[in-house]
Length: 333
Image (cartoon, rainbow, N blue to C red; front, side, top):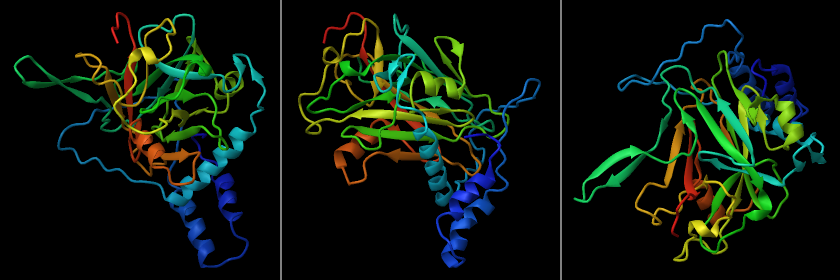
């Protein structure tokens, strides 16, 4: 989404919903007029950008955009992403690659870095704490495992792009990966997260193998699963368990040996080793008239899919992503 909102385009989406002036029409148009003061700008060289950290006791005011506006935004994204030709990209046929969470190195695989400029004012990004027990039964809290993810006042997610065909479903446990495409009509399970990044002088960027890329470049080279301009839209695929939780949870050796250490989304593997192999990040998204949303490709109620979703991401005004290390050196399991 462009940071300077094209309100006339968004308004046209709302106006196309109904054709006559009535009470319902007014309710449909109201969210647009309410959002006229939501001005979003991109960072320009020489701009002064002030970022402050969260302090306990500070009154942090957060407001949401009206749901009608978010629905219109989802519709615009869907139309725009569907325009991307479903042909072979420079990395192969779209949908062949998925992103696993980078840890130390991607080896021979392509590396994708996605930097999100989070809320500037009283920013409250953090790595979720991990509760660790010592030999005496006492607990302490240490940062949890997040791979090579960089967390300060902003967030940089790092992925290794690997062949999707190597991954499989497990009988009793679900997990997720970054997807390069979004399939609305599919027997597989996908969801999209729209992150409303900082409105003022936003400094988002994306790199492929260390080289900065435009949103158009990423769409052409990888697929329609992204919108990486001044807000961020990411797609994830859930490898949904066949029977739900049970006693035969996967061990690291159930995951493909890619020759690298890596993680996936979801809380899994907490019983494999004594050290911490799970974790997550809390992302402080835009405070003012926040436009975050989650979109699923399933419409019928599905308790297993919803349960898996909750183990990978917590939506709302801010975002939490949950991760697990599944392949690492010297593993015994």
